[in-house]
Image 1 (cartoon, rainbow, N blue to C red):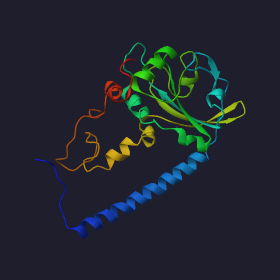
Image 2: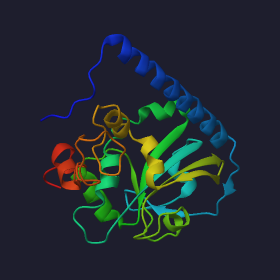
Image 3: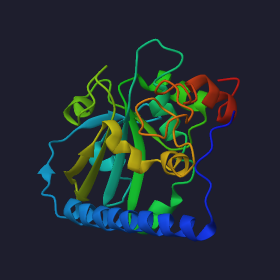
Image 4: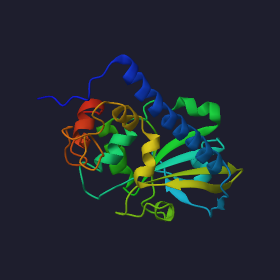
Length: 228
């Protein structure tokens, strides 16, 4: 039988929703406060780094900004020789299909990964990414930013002043969830993510963590180039 919540009259439902709304508003204000603290973080002046661009040329980190003053880098996990790379990274980055809105904020979003640029570009086409990718295979940049070869993924933000670049923020693990729209939509559903670790009412459908996530191959079938 389909799992159902307690069924009540409208006034009872509204009272429960109002109580939840208090917590939701408090969480919103807390996120505002966190963002304010993030804007006040000190920064680290970075040395010169050289990355490999999509045309195969070497570019400085400052050049990756492409004239903007702010930059977000997503450090995509990479396993050498694999046809399909990390499904979590592939799933997250597949959401970033429209990034032009960042222009109004003098910002750019790019992907950086440890793979060689030729393999990287083939994967980009295979999974249907549209943003620009860079390779840090021959640079310590990825490792220094918290995404060493085989060591996971990360998000970093940077500020540029001329040719000088400052690292302003970093996150990894579940910290990247705030950068995805999928979890917000799924968490709003009656059954939520349906993963075993979640606190859900008895009888709610639950399955092993990640088991409902699309595979990289699934994402490629939906968005990518079948000939890549």
